[in-house]
Image 1 (cartoon, rainbow, N blue to C red):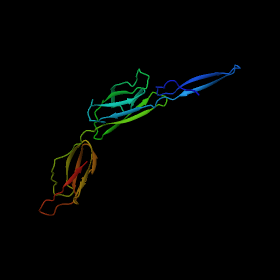
Image 2: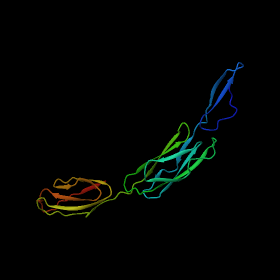
Image 3: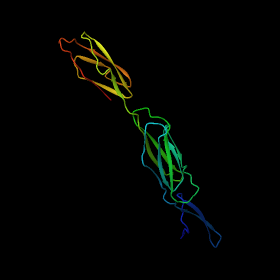
Length: 212
């Protein structure tokens, strides 16, 4: 029997070569492999959502018993803090903190995501991934003027201006009025066209809804 006289405190296995010599001088070699401890690479956060601005910072905590590197999948995110390289080669647990921060404003109204990948520098290439998000800016949607008047003549038109930083659609329930365009993105002009004259002495009213 071969008995190890100490623990392998590394996360990687180790080997030794035993040479066995018989009384007649013949030799045989045996490779003995001792497994390492179970690798641990755990990544946690208290909050994983940045605001939409630049230099918003969030901590990320790494618990491990091995060395590791980090890779970020997007250009708008960077970090400082722990390197993941430890001078102590034993299997003690390391508790590291990295501080991730946004390097660009998210000018979109849509939240965006970054995958942050941690790769262990061990034989098994233990890996962990966490997702960090950056909020989009607040949406704006206004129309000016808020009320318009169309002359009582065939195909008479009037316009209004949409001020927005997102996509929008128009809802028109009036049978005597068309609106163009019926959808769009960001700032655009709407054109309202009366498809028939008003034969009544009372004005017609249409309520046009614009929503994002």
